[in-house]
Image 1: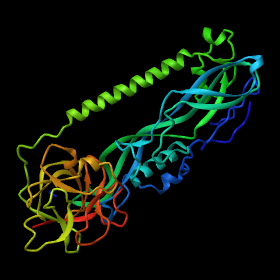
Image 2 (image 1 turned 90 degrees about the vertical axis):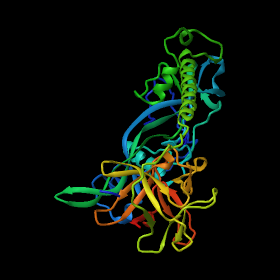
Image 3 (image 1 turned 90 degrees about the horizontal axis):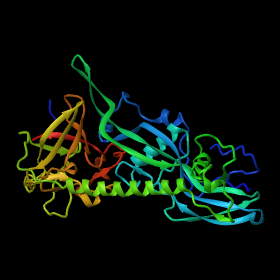
Image 4 (image 1 turned 180 degrees about the vertical axis):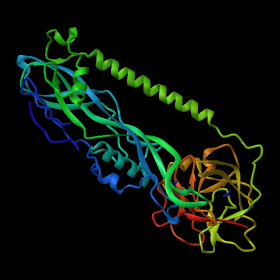
Length: 427
């Protein structure tokens, strides 16, 4: 056998395998993952629940890993029989068993800093180098070249360690310390989700008689080899050998994928937003201002425009006046719809661009839709400063630069310079 190199978010393997033959598993870098911070380094630099934060952090958020599971997964496989006369280098066409796609929450396109930070923390948590950008394992059959030096029944495979789990969001918010005192601290926000990523891809060949580490990629491939079955023990001509377990695993994966797709369609149909018969709005009217400066949020007049920073004057026509509607509070975090007095619409992220980093904020007809719901993180009592987070996307709201006419946009982790902190000022 041959050896190859590693495949690469106001109110009150070890791939050192001991085999009975000269079989040595190769690890081949077909996709080079970014190096995650070593365990301890990522944790040491990350904010933790209960840490102190400042008003500049109200418009920011950070992830924290709630759970992580590492599962050896075979992405491609083929059973292959080698006879005395067929040893040497051969190219084998393996079949796709499973496709792994990197994702964080509902975002299948890792664009924002929050998603990248989440995956980086995953790597530090499990002590592995994982993919921290959008990618997926091959979804088509692929060829593996191997130098067979000994006759026998082999399982040729490509595999990886699939890493899945859940994450939470840490947001800066007021914390009641008791006795009428408050402080700003990083606390668990409402936004949670799941992630999927994977480690370096490995190619290899394994036989039934090879001694392999338990719970390894090689051991997973050995299971698909169906050792002990009639197909495995019978004599064969050189070439492919059917594997009932590999076929069953592939069928189960395809069935699961189809069921998940059908469930998604059903959920999308059921989630069609319904127009609100009436909003229950607070009587107070607010401006959402840049603290200490004259510009504030102003709703658009045109349907295809967005909410922009403007200076109030006699032409504002209440486009800079907002009310909090259908307000709820949980663990000190407000949730509300933002209704604009000037155009009668509710603030929202356009659905067709909701998955994009820096998607702009606009207004639309008020409906039952999480895109029109916002979490509001508040400074200590006596201060009007807030941070706002879209409920559906989880992204924080901010602006790229302080300028008249600048669009208000969403940023997955918020703005690093504190430009996501606003003042909810009563008019």
